[in-house]
Length: 259
Length: 330
Image (cartoon, rainbow over all chains, first blue to last red; front, side):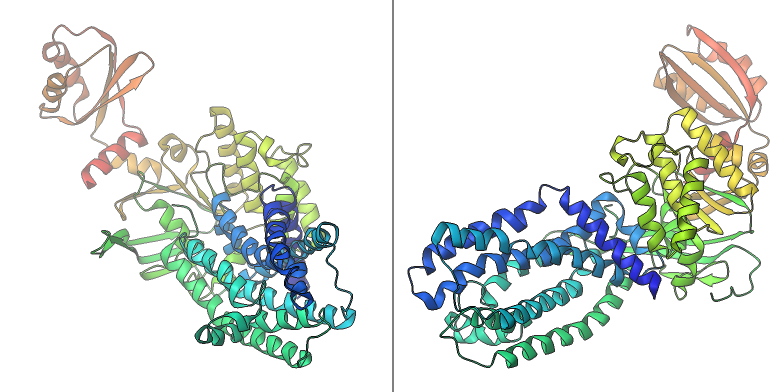
């Protein structure tokens, strides 16, 4: 067990170091979130205080999600380009342990996205969240992190099975912005789309996060936390089967290498 | 640690087949099957340095990937140290190392030491053991002193030695080397060959693929020649040469030679093949034939008016035997 923890830690360390020296990583946690936050703040600061949380936090949540989910997948694609994907696949450490380390690194980097976006909100738009409940906010952020972490851990191995899976999975990143209510409430979506939103764990965690920062918000925040955690647990169970599938599929197709 | 099942051969392969299924066409897609391995059998003794030779696309890398658990065979069986590569992947992975040729396969933006430490942890080697082993490997492979430099600053030879260090981190009983000297300068390649031979002399089973025949001839205990997914010959380098024992080689250098002249040479009864290669400013014509002396006497008559730079006859090398075998198998 200790050797597995050490392997996960080293994977976390390596992935973080590779991100820090990569100029592209800064796009995801610094540049893109600021652009989203700026758009959100322009639109939402004029629409009343109830929506300000979306403006102040929306860009950060988008950045957080992008880095956590996409960097995990990117790192698998980079391993393929480096020619190291086959090597990490054929070690005695299970792939899931290596992926957990990588995603923890992405999660940490993703949290940094809140710094520029909240900074932009405060200094650029004088938008503040005076009614923020620190305890509820912290728990909600923890639940949101957990939901992002589980989704990323579950979906990242799919990047390994096919060189073209990346294109499809990239699309999911954008869909989640809208479906999970990062920049506007899910209630604004068409009725037929809302059930999909409610089946996604970040929807509930995001709702709890924004509610804990909004004075007029009402609702069962604890219930939303539980809904998010429950859905995440369900994803975790499904991901066990997914990892088995990926292991077999990658060994059949031989697509771990570039050619 | 689980014990190994009883085994006579370090690597044992029986009727191994690998078929890749791809699609062809844009709108009307049809499935296409590419046979990479068409049923091969191999048995490699513990401590043996075995070479698998063949042209590009013959199935060398596919064989290595099946044996290193990276690919699932379509049918047949493959065992490494008695463990099935399909059902006992964990046991196989713990006991093997593998090195693929070329510069890729390393984290260039990190140091050589960081690369090794990362893989040591992924191989679940205790820290005190890995620290000692990394130090020893850096020393033996001539990387000591440069281990904290980024890999992107390494020469190709250094990168290949770092690959080998990574492959040896877990002190594997079986080491797979897929064209390890590809792209290396002659001195670097020779040094690596000496290292590989040394590892076999210390009891490691080594499975080497290459298309450098002199390399296989120099270091391998036994070789097999693979062509289009089938083993076409197997034995010691000497026995492979004896397969074409009645074949000799006549070689000559010329400035130029026409297609008609080559066809005239090929038309001789005793000639089995004629190969023309460029070497510096000359063309080297290599004739594989049954009676070299007779062919040499006929050269002047057949190629009247051609200025020969050098003409010689010699015994067949492993490369000559390989050319014959690959030609026959096509």
